[in-house]
Image (tube, rainbow, N blue to C red; front, side, top):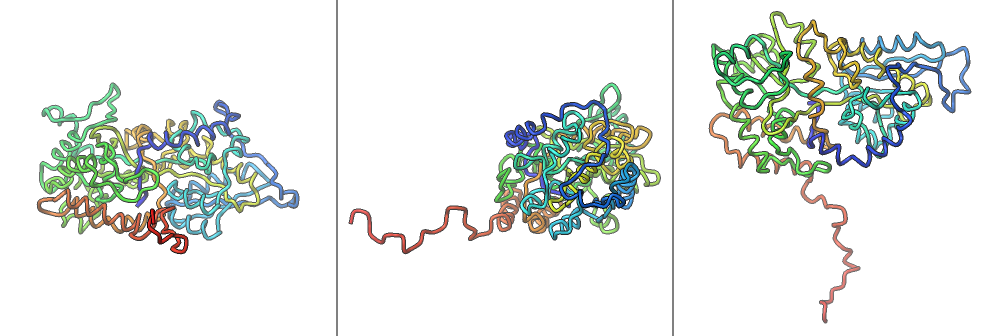
Length: 479
């Protein structure tokens, strides 16, 4: 489970306008620097005068990911180390961001570390970070057109850029291009997404999504689509239908599945996702995951993130491409944003900031982007062949870049894991339970269960404490 995203990106970003303006003032000296790469260079932290000139200063960089991603990070470290004799970086790796977060909160943070935006609230509250805005400004990092504004703003908090945006991965729809043949569908008069002059299909409706699922599932045991019955899986459809996942964008106390707009969006979406002729059978799911079914050609469409690309490229006989999440009323998706953070405990702040500036440069991030696992927040690299890989699938990798602006931004929910565990069984019933669905009753139950996690009964609101009996007069007014 990657994240929960309760507020549309544009709306949340407007609410952070004051913080963004303050951040912009802090970065005004970082005017456009053209195409120049930030070069790693020695800088002195207050403590560095004690270092022996014969020994390089040593900093650590922590990153998480697959073996291939970690190997790419090691290449970035090696390149940085080759450029300097005065400081050296050592790589520490974790299998996932949860492991990384646990070490950082336990006081074992590397000087620089990769983190997910969903962890930013906990890291700031724990005072585990040093803001990077002025440090990167001094090193000529261009916060303007060279980086996704949505990704950078996601790491702005308390009027500071807490971490530097590194990668961003919106949810998209992967589809088997042999099973979902839009040209053939169009010849048969079926609803298909419109292609531009270059053949790119960068938007489609829920009706076109449903038609593609029906077309793919018309023969044999092949199925048309699978969407995970989770908050993350359903959120894009809810937001696209102008519904809300949470009752409040900043401090949620409940899910909002019983909201009228949310129910309407779910009703339209579930007409497709609950159709047993379009979705995998229990027997199929018992022997394989949806991604495995997709790789085998038994499932035509599955929602996922950029990290699926390398695995799908290796699947024998699979031809695939990507489309954005389907649109009900307005475009929306969810996803994850990662950033490079500077530990509050680092004693080599200048060297650590040099490494961050180098790691987000075109040359360095291209090395990681070439693995296929990430969508760079660096817009120059995101538009480059290293990311788009025109000779490889998916042919429409530009869809990832286009979908970023429609991503929702996650709230900071301390009970995120508990919430997911509490409501997932009900969401699975909502999507997969056979028979007639009582949408009203089920959505009310989902909201009720969520309240037990987000606002447990008996937990008083600030300022609502009962007055001290000793300070309360027992006299009736007027006596």
